[in-house]
Each structure stands twice: as C-alpha cells, then as structure tokens.
Length: 334
Length: 182
Ligand SMILES: Cc1cc2nc3c(=O)[nH]c(=O)nc-3n(C[C@H](O)[C@H](O)[C@H](O)COP(=O)(O)OP(=O)(O)OC[C@H]3O[C@@H](n4cnc5c(N)ncnc54)[C@H](O)[C@@H]3O)c2cc1C
Ligand code: FES
Ligand code: FES
Image 1 (cartoon, rainbow over the protein chains, first blue to last red):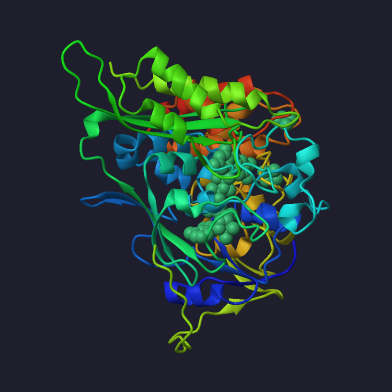
Image 2: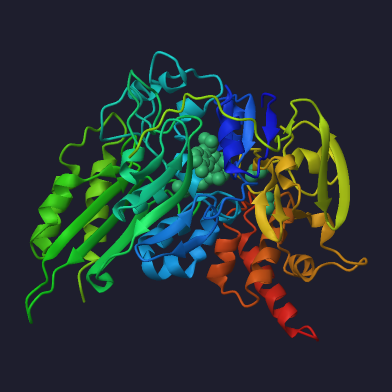
C-alpha cells in the first residue's frame, strides 16, 4: 500500500473541499478501497473519510410521503435488517442479504457498494496493466473470460459486481449527489456508464462527487406490485453474482377468473455487463399481457436476444434465460 | 439532473480539518477495554496494528484481502475483517480480539464449547470462528443451525471442522441460556 494522508471531516462542505485536492479519494467502509490500495490499482494521495460526517440523512433508513430514503453511509447489514426495507422493498432486502458475508456487510456501505470497482482478475492483479488501468489492452477479451460480460460494447469487458445496483434500478431509485461535477438527483440507472475511449470511468460521478442518499419511490398501490431478486452464485454464500436478476412487475386489476395483466415491468440483470443491465426488450414483451407461460418464455428470449458470448462465458446466456424465467414465475399472483 | 461547475473562489473554512500523515503519528485505540496510543502511519491496517504494534497475535493474517476470515475481530460487538480496516478508522470504537474473551482466568462459554465439541484441528481459523459465534449469540441467543451457518459463513476452515463448529455454537447457546441469572 502506498502512503497517503488522511482526514476525517465532520462537515460536508469540508469533505467536498478536501476531495477536490488532486489525488483525493473518498473512504467509506473501506472494504473495497483497501483491496484496491493493497493491489495498488488505486494510489490516492489523500483519503477523505466520510465516516465522521454529521450531515443529516447520511445514515439509516427513513420514509417521507414519496420516498423510502436510504443514507449512503447505511451499512449493508443495517439495510438488510431494517423493517422498512423488509416490508416495503423486499427486492432490496433480498439483494443485500446475498452480498458477501457478515464481516463485509457490517462495514460496507450502500454508497460504497454502488461505487465499488470491478472484480476482473486482470484488473485486480497488481502486475497487469490492463486497459482499465490505463494500459492498451483488455486481456480478458482473448484470455480467461468466464466471469465477463455478454452484453454491451466497451474496451473493458469486466462486469459490474454490485448486487444493490440492479435491485435499486428495478425500484426506480434515484441518487442524491453533491459535488463539482454532478449535483442533484439522478436516476440510479443514469449513474452508470460503460467505459470508452473518452473516459475509463464506470460512473458519471467525478472524483469529488459524493452520493448522499438513495431515494426509492413508494408505489401508489403497493398491493399490485411484486418483485424479487435472484442471484446465481458459485456457492450458497460469499460469491459475487455470476448472473443476477432483479424483477418488478405491477399488475392491473383483473376481473374474476381472468389472469391479471402486467402493467409496468422492470427487469435488471447483474453480472452480465459492465453496468447493471436493463433488459428493456423483455420489459416491453411483458407489458400489457397476462403473465402466462408463453409471455414468460417470450420475455426470457428477449432478455438474452442481444447477447454476445466470448470463448468461456456462453453459459451465462442459458443461466440468464433460466433465472429470468424463475424470477417471473415467482411473481405470478396467487 | 442539474450540473454545476463552481468557479468562484471559496471562503476559508471556519474550522480547518486536521490532515494527518503520511508520516507516523499518534492514534488512539481501545482494545479489550484498554486504551492504547500507537505511533503509526495512516495506512496501518487494524490487523497489523493489533499483531505488530500491540502484540495481539490471536487475529491471524491469512489472505490480507478479505477472503478468509482469520483476521475477524469485533468492532463495537460486530464481526469485521481487521485486514480491510485502517487502524486510524477505529478511533472512537471498541475493539475485541480473542485475547479479550476470557475473564479472570475463566474461558468464555463459546471458547469452552469449542473445546468440548472438538471444533478445531489446526486452530488457525478458530479465533475468528469463536468471535463470529460470540457476536451471533449476543444478538440472537437462540439461533437455529441455519443462523449459525450464516454467521460463520465468512470464516473459512481449511481443516473442514464445520460440523463441529456448528455443534459448538449450538452447545454454547444452550449453556448460556441455562446459566443462572439469565
Ligand atoms: C470478499 C468480498 C466479497 C464481496 N462480495 C460481494 C457481493 O457478493 N455482492 C456485492 O454487491 N458486493 C460484494 N463485495 C463488495 C462489497 O459489497 C463492497 O466492498 C462494499 O459494499 C463497499 O462499501 P464500502 O463502504 O466498504 O466502500 P469503500 O471501500 O469505502 O469505497 C468503495 C468505493 O466507493 C467510493 N465511495 C464510497 N462511498 C461513496 C459515496 N458516498 N459517494 C461516492 N463514492 C463513494 C470510494 O471512493 C471507493 O472508490 C464483496 C467484497 C469483498 C471484499
Ligand atoms: S486476513 Fe483473510 S480476511 Fe482478513
Ligand atoms: S481448524 Fe484448521 S483451518 Fe479451521
């Protein structure tokens, strides 16, 4: 680990100012950043701990008329255990429960989870200078790409590892951000981008921008909305998503004996692209018709239609298809 | 989304924020109820501070990157990986290591249960397992087998003592429940 300076401001204004110094980086739980510091994939001059900030709203979960509001410093453990999350946002509770292991969930924060770096073994290797680290080439493209992307076009084919991001995007969440580059509320989906020749960043935030809160809109008719988060893992715990699916459907009132029609649909995939991947064609296939077996088949096909497998990851197509079907079947109204 | 680029010079902050390091400096830690002042760089991890500066070698360094659990300690009663935490970030918190569990020469009931159920072979993972189980029982005195499995899911045991570890945890829970005065 390279040496750095360290500050723990209490006021947001002070944190934002420190973060604008060259080489500054925000530190929350540190569970991702420390692995990067040790592998020297990040070498900041100054770490600005956000753990001392006294700004209201930064910690914990609360609700107002329109939103469930989640502070960026809320830990994953607080999130999975919070009654508001369990009752009102089960997709999110399910996603949080599958993250890592208790030791990481007690420390890792919501903001850090959304902003975490990719786990690609080439990127994480201290001696490999891949494209994402400023090098010339993505070694996964021709190399070991079992865990890499099947969707999206980018010089880097690592997948986004967050479990919370697909769940929150399926919930139409917004991020409240402050900083010199981005300020205000933005749809969480808009936070993410695929790295390109113009910028190798994976989010639209600059180095001095901070997420303060996540706002999840409350459904106007909660009884008509059903959602689920499913995650395919290499083992039952302690595994990043090989593929994950966050699905949320609202059902229109059906008449007696008739299957209710799907009103709105959200289908967001994790583990398959450089950013959380919204399966818009599948969503469109679901809207307006009852959730029959045929509709589910059609949606699953639409979800994988544009997939571009590489030498070692074609299995993800079948896995995605199956997981989408399983998720949708679990949402059939009783 | 509103974009704002601020160009105007900013006023001085009323209270300047101390910036520490990169050289060594004092940091204050509370470990097993005792106060310590260390002289370390901000990049010192809690694990290195415990082992190398305080001589508390019960927390082990297996992987040093959050993938084995041998470095598990309690921060304010919750299990964390000491290898993924800066020591300087632990100021103001209470740290418990395996050395802090026995009281007045008496082993903690979880430690005793591990011995009685033979829940270890080489013992390298054991301090972490015991602390994860202790944290579970503090939060949930009546765990199911599934609760125990989840609680120690972040502690690898390369000797494969898992079935005994689960039995030890359940035995400790039972013992604690039957203790007089509880
Ligand atoms: C062994 C292991 C297994 C894991 N398994 C999973 C898994 O299964 N699923 C999953 O989703 N994740 C997994 N993770 C990742 C884990 O969830 C993250 O490390 C954690 O959530 C990061 O939160 P943190 O507070 O520790 O972030 P930090 O490590 O402190 O920060 C991470 C990044 O986010 C930035 N950042 C932090 N807070 C903010 C903010 N408020 N605004 C803007 N930027 C910010 C930091 O500058 C840094 O770049 C795993 C990690 C490990 C080590
Ligand atoms: S030493 Fe392996 S998790 Fe910390
Ligand atoms: S007893 Fe040897 S690693 Fe667990």
